[in-house]
Length: 326
Image (cartoon, rainbow, N blue to C red):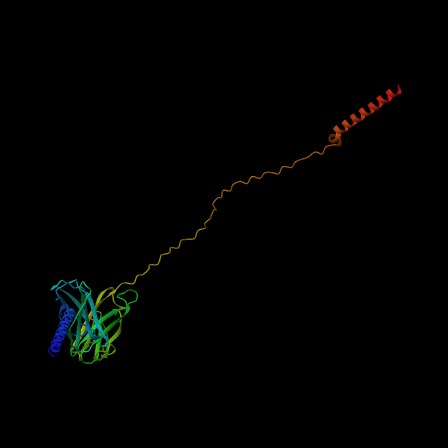
């Protein structure tokens, strides 16, 4: 019986030591999280500083820090996240890294969880991971609009003095805004274009955002650079949001026509330039005159030879005859 009890105690002790060792391996880091502004409004930025300390007796390396702000983006369907590396840490050594996030315009009021995860390993390749949470609160004012974009079709006007301006307005308050008066004006030029519209509150971009386009006609304005103001008047005229932009007007370039001076017509005799032509040398054909030879000139020698031959033969015959007669 005593042996059984002793064996059980030994087993419990061994399991306890194993859990302690496992916990030590699972930890490895101390994490300190500092959110610079734990209460922000839509569109504002906030920083998350993470300080990491190696709390084991050996070095840790390949340390990565990941920060996730849960369900704050895309109307609550997505997170904001970022990650970075730290240097290798000796025992009791520490390092820190800072992450910056921008709160979306389309967001609900409330607290959002920030999850910080630190991972690393020792020289043997054993993994260490620690996770710690913090929070950031999104708070909205009762009435608040913000102008995020003013975009001109053309910032410099020349011959055409008409341009268009696109203005984007968000309702980042927690109340609907009715009869918002959006105006674009320059008092000195007597220009003031207006449009009236409504915006709902909430976290749906389609309800809280509007882009309006206004036309500016500067046809009668002299060349120069002018400052215009964009104002959104809301909350029954008690509040306003104002932005400014510059617009340059230049003279339209003109082309001066050439002056043509007509002179009295004079008869102009054009003498064609003398063209030097190499002389053509014509060699007259030479006609050979052939005098026809007479029959005697042509065959005289042969006839003489023939006659001489005949004469020899005759003389021979005569000589033979005489000899025979003797």
